Structure formats: structure tokens, C-alpha cells
Length: 435
Ligand SMILES: Cc1ncc(C[n+]2csc(CCOP(=O)(O)OP(=O)(O)O)c2C)c(N)n1
Image (cartoon, rainbow, N blue to C red; front, top):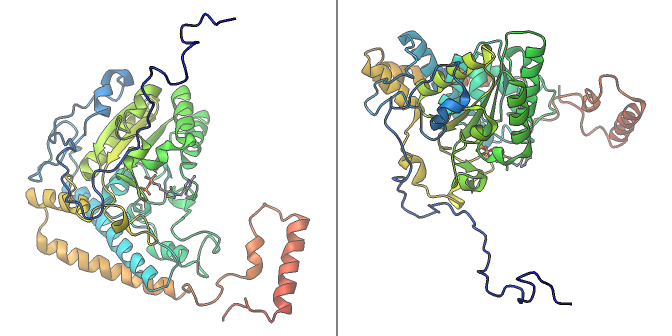
């Protein structure tokens, strides 16, 4: 019997346009000239600043623009100017410059074979440092691997960070973790995991616990724009909006996820800040290379969280100025002209220019500070290297490999540990630690 469905007697595909997928393609590949004219950069000072008690639905426009404070001449303008004292501005600049000096030195240490791996935050210094200044020291941070600036801004020991990078005898993680995957509970810096975006729901859970206990501390978390494609990102936002968890979500949109440009995470269709809109969460899109804008947005989001207005999502629009890691060569997939053509400039230079513009800094002091910070990092490195570097034998007792899997070691791990030690001993103790 013939079907009565109107299309039932057509051949498959007949009379229909062929379906096609859209495959995002970055604008510039190696060798291409770069022109970022299409990147929309609104003037500094233009975005409005809603009251922190306003309903998120009342300012969705802020998810599609850029909150900017520093203009092209180094002036701080508009309603988001946090009006920080010159002293705080200078300290923030110093922390950012220290982070850059630290990155530079540790990158070199990797090239010299002293550590197996490193990741820089070049060009993204404002994102972590300015946020750290706007948060309380007691607030809990759930970072990705590119917010070492939080530790540096909180004054954490560079030697301790280096010990971890070197996996040496003083490594607080006992050599069990890849370099740069810090964990510093004392500085409110949650253990970094290699698995992208797992920190997002964990930050929400921590924030919910803080609220459930009637505490006053809030949580902040960071991930890259590529990481927003993970399922964990979306479940975190759902939990946070439902329970109005006191948490700040930071998306560091540095345009690249290793060799994948931001279009593969959805940037061609909308902004990352706009993800907030569908969840009913406050969303801000911020000039990530403007330390004052990052500070102001974080302070605003923190106030919302502290007054039980719930979560805020902040997209920091920035650019990953160098390779993804020491294992990456960006020359293979993007134009070398990109970093210099980036329209939002360099975050350190922009804060420095502002301080000079208001008569609170000068080039000579800046150069002297850079020199002093390089010396400070060098001295810390010397100190850390006394505890060992890569290639100088095993720095932790071999049997400690089995520690910390469970709070108390079960019998089968004890058995495996003994087996390992017996085999090591039978083969002449090749893993014996050097004195
Ligand atoms: C669940 C998971 N998938 C893939 C990876 C491999 N990986 C490590 S970093 C990275 C890119 C992340 O890019 P983005 O989130 O934009 O952050 P960025 O590195 O730019 O700071 C990928 C795919 C991983 N570590 N975890």
C-alpha cells in the first residue's frame, strides 16, 4: 500500500539541497600577513557598570562588548576605573613583571634540560595577577595551568614553585606531578589537574560548601576558551546558577587551544561571555590585557558573590603570545605576525604607560625593576637547584611512589611496593638515590 506521506515516493536526496558541515578555519596561517581589523575593540570607558545587585537579565549587552579602562594614551577612563592608589598599581605592575621574569627563566631551564616541561603565560599576566589583587587572600582559586600569576601575586615562594618544576628533594608534591601542576593549599591555590575543566565543577562545589556553612569566602576558577567545550564547563554553570553559588568563572580567551583557534570552541557564532546569558548568570566580557579592567570586573563579581547575588562569568579577551608549552611550535599553525598585530597590546606595557602618564613611574625605574626581578628569580633558581634538577638521579625515595594513593596503604599496594624494591635490589639498585 502506498504511503500517504507527501515525500514517501521521492528518491532519497531528490529535490533537496545537499547538507554540508561548516569547518571553522583560522584567518591566518603560517606565512600570511595579519590584519586584525575585524576584531571589534570598543573605546575604553564606554561600557556601563551596573549595580552589583542588578538582575543578570538586565545587562546582557555587557556579554557582547569589552569592558575597558585604559585608553590608547594610558589614561584610566569610564565607570569601571577602580581608582586604585599609585602604590597598588605599582605593586600590581611588579607582580606582573615578576611573573614574566619567572616564566622566562623557567622556559630557559627547560631548554637547558633542567626540567622536562614548562608553560608560559606571556601576554596573559593581567588575567591572573589583577584578579588576585581584587580577591581576598582567603578566597579559594581553582586555576588551570596558566595562572601561576595567582601564586606570584599572593607572594608565594618562587623557590617552592621551582622545586615542583624540578621534581626535586624539596618538591612538596613528592615528584608525583608534572612540572607546573602546583598545589598550594596555604595560598588558596587548588591542586592543578591535567584533565581540562575538572576544576570548574569543583570550584562550584567549594563555593556551595562555603555558603552551606555560612562562611564568607568565595571561589574563583579559570579555564581557557578551548576548555569551555568540555561537558564539565556546562554542568558547573548549571549547578552554580541553580544554587546561586558564590563563584567567579573566568574564561581566558587567548584565541588558541594548542593549534586549534577559538572558532573550534564556538567563537565564530557568539562570544564566550554570552554563555552566561543562557544560564541566567551575570556575564562580562573584558579587555584581558587591561589590568585595571580585569581588576574592576573581578572586584564587581566578588561583590556579587559576597552579597549572595550568585555567580559571574568573565571572558578575558586576550592573546597567547607564545607557544602552548615547551613542547609546542606555533610557527607550524599560525602566522608569526599575530602576536605583534594583536590590537589589545601588551598588558605590562599598558599598565606601565598608565603609571608613567599619571606621573607615578618612569622608564628608568621600570628598567631597574626588571633587572632587580631578574636577579631575584636567578637567586631563587640557584636556591632551588641545590635540591636537585632533572637528570641528576632520583630525588625522592623510590618507595614513596606508593604513598598517598589512599590515606592508609592497602595490603595489595604494600605487596606491590615490596615487589618493586625486591626487583630493584636484584638488579643492582639502579634507582638508588645519589647522596
Ligand atoms: C580532558 C582533556 N582533553 C584534552 C587535553 C589535552 N590538552 C591539554 S591543554 C589543551 C588545550 C587547552 O586550550 P585552552 O582551554 O584554550 O587553554 P590554553 O592552553 O589556551 O590556556 C588540550 C586540548 C587535556 N589535558 N584534558
